[in-house]
Image 1: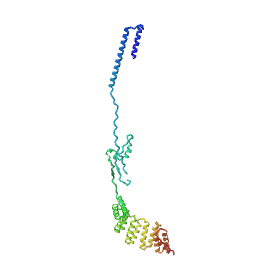
Image 2: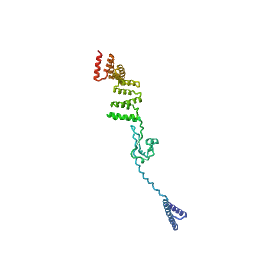
Image 3: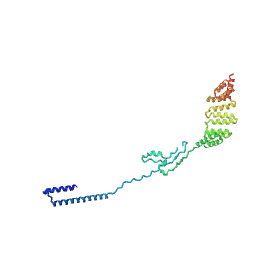
Image 4: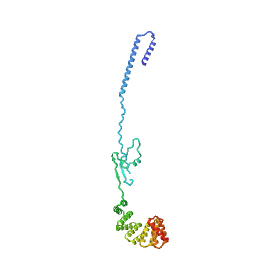
Length: 336
């Protein structure tokens, strides 16, 4: 309406300039003013209509942009079963490799370094899709490298178990198998010799002993075993010769010397028997039986004082009641 006010002001100014008295109204001028007012109002209405039409046109020309619709979230993949960690063999158990799918990492976390990924997964899983991995773990047995000595050890251990169960015949078969696979198995040969001797198979035992001497020239045990077989056959001279020859091949313990002393005593060689017993008690001074053997050998040689000293040493050791009574009686006899 500011345009109308401006037009009215212009009309008043024009009347003032024309000199018309304020109280006199000119009919022609009033008509012209009224016509002018209607012209201005019509122009305003047309302008308003044109503006409204222009705004509608612009609105229709603007392309409609629809609000972005959220995409439906992809269904989360079902987590794969946790990776089986190959078990481990305490014994060695064939290493086994357990094939399984690795567990998926959360999306918010960064992937582990390549070095850690390789260390955590078997090589076969680095390129294997989880859908192709077997549902159940598959154990892959690696070939075992078995040597003849390892096979012989296994057979010997089985023989030991059979002996403990009172099954000597089956143990002999296992020991034979062990020596077939590895003839140098010392424990298997020694055990087999002892079992064969107990069952009276002397010829087979002697063969094993001779072969053992060839395979183990520094092992004095075979000389003692051969001497025992000779004693079983009543050949004390052969046993003594074998034991003496064995002394040149290795170190003899107290039992070896005591065995040689007993053989010499059977042969009536009291001096050699006493020497062998001295070697035995030097290594095992707490063995009362060997002290008694030394005392008997010395007494038979007429060395009463040394014999009584040996009996006294024997009396201080742990003896059976019967043997202790025997030693006490001998001590009393030699003290007179």
